[in-house]
Length: 91
Image (cartoon, rainbow, N blue to C red; front, side):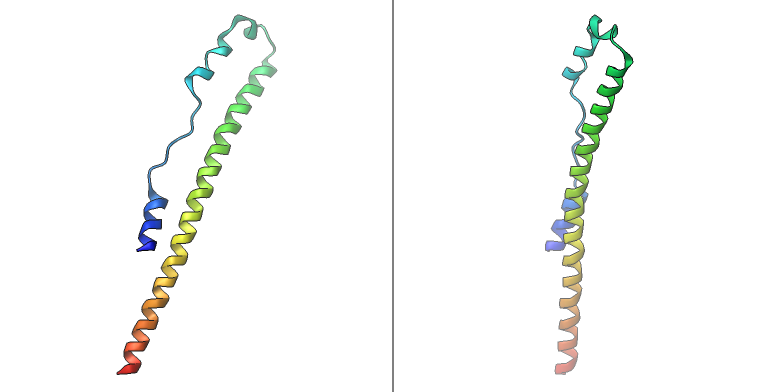
């Protein structure tokens, strides 16, 4: 049962961490368009880093659920093997 729950948690739909639309308005100021392209490159890199960090956190969480599912499945197989051996040996 625990294996099934961890499988569901691993395959559950995930929310995407995207940039909000409110973050798009400030770069439209005229004074920013007169600035060097370096500022735009830094802002773009910062946004991409934010998205990558959010994806990494989500992937780490899913990896933990997957690992728990694998361990629980191995434990379940061991329990079934023990039960079959006990049944065969008793009789």
